[in-house]
Structures are given as structure tokens and as C-alpha cells.
Amino acid sequence: MAWFLNIYRCDRCRKTWTDEWSCTCDDECPHCGFRDMSPLNSENLTELIVEDGGKFVVLRSSDEAEDDPDYKELGRFPTRDAAREFLRSYPSE
Image: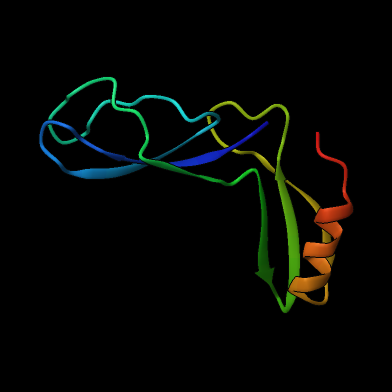
């Protein structure tokens, strides 16, 4: 399932906030309660490459993800470039 970091700015109080969710959905301002704010921008976090113990780990949000991304490891690679190449060739779900 897709996973996003949504970035918002309130039309009423002008404050910004972020929220992670499985879609680029509207949100309520946590500062003043103004509703139905659409994201200004969203970063796709469905697939990630993270460094762990000198290796580069490819993660993908699972199809069962609902309240959190529930990342599943797809592979470990010696370099970030090798991990990127793997993702380019790995089938999307």
C-alpha cells in the first residue's frame, strides 16, 4: 500500500505540520482546528532505502498497512546504488 508524508499549511493560522498516511488526504489543523486542509506537498514513502550496519536496506510498505506503513524488507545491498538498481527492476505492487 502506498505511504505518504503529507505537508500542510493552515489557511486560517498559517502554521505548518506534517502527517503520514496511506493517501494524500485532507487533514485538520492541529494548531487551531481548521478543517479540510489539503496537502501543500506530499513525499512518497512507499519504498525506502535505509542504511543499517553498513548495508543499504530496501523497504516497502506492505499491502496490509492501514495505520502505519508496516514496512517489509525486500533486500540488503552493499551500496545505495545497488539498492536503487534493485528497486528499479523490482515489480511494483
